[in-house]
Length: 459
Image 1 (cartoon, one colour):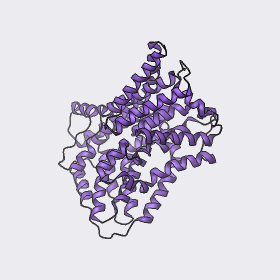
Image 2 (cartoon, one colour):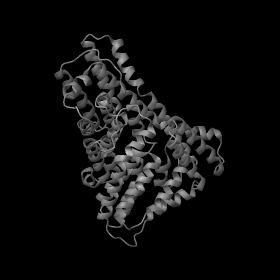
Image 3 (cartoon, helix red, strand yellow):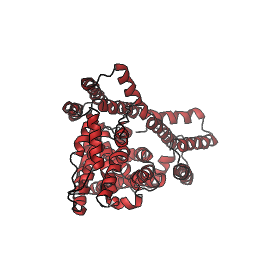
Image 4 (cartoon, helix red, strand yellow):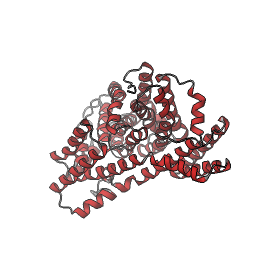
């Protein structure tokens, strides 16, 4: 959490105008120019620097604010690097391919939409990437639904729901690590606390999809079988490939540091990979850095497994550092504190504070269309208020995920919304009503906040 002293106290109008300009720059760049968020964030940083200099604030103090903001994300940076290494090592060991193969074994035409949700949830949990899950298994399920004459909109809603359940609850997910890191909560404590809202949303979603699933006996699953066959041909499906998952689970239960947990799980994966492969240590080092490249000839399998590596996390790391630098300036110039001061007197209870944080996270997603900024800006803005009303930090990190991470795919002009529509060929507005898990998560987090259920107080 930022511990940055304000260098000035802007007027409320100045704060509103500056935030409005930043939102306009970022949202228009992402939506109209289809730019990556890095460039408009850098432009926003330059605009804030110019404002600070006009107010005669020394540049070295503005620079210190940026650096203080960036420093708060160094823990997340190292976690991201370990995630890239873990993904690569788990593919080498066959852990991720084995999990995917097992998940496909659950596919059945009975309760089809529930099965789609369950399988994508398992795979998303295993690989920690919602967009990769959508782009591979999601595309396969859309093809299956068309062959079975099922609703592609409902199928897409099930895919999105499952993929973002996995993205939200996986220790491999960058958003999950970011939410925990930005608030200053242990990764696995954050995941355990999210279960209070996520598990009910998960089971309600299964029931809802079961209730609307048609009966389709004797359906064919050619794409699913092709992917399973491709995985088997790679000689990566083995019983011992589950051992890194078991180790990760045991270490998380023991509350071992995420750094150590991810490192040991990665090392075990690398060691196991030598059982079924004759690759060299030089090759392992290359994969750890650059990621695994699958070349099976099956486009779905190659897309699913060509990932991981430290290098794959560079874009996320740079975005985190830029966003945190922007946040540092927003705090050092007193902009965020001034805006918060304007509504602070209305947030005297835990319920209203959680509701305000959830609405803010949703608002950033809707206005800017970027889930990282939704987590970062909301986390920094509400950290101190959660402390004031006596709430433990993990309540905030849970709210950020419940109302930040899973909302992005529901916004048509967001990064996730545009990507998913392109990959599945289903407009965001069509699958939105059926993305039950994503719709339920913010509702449950606000409901639990108002009632006080599952909230943890500061000791």
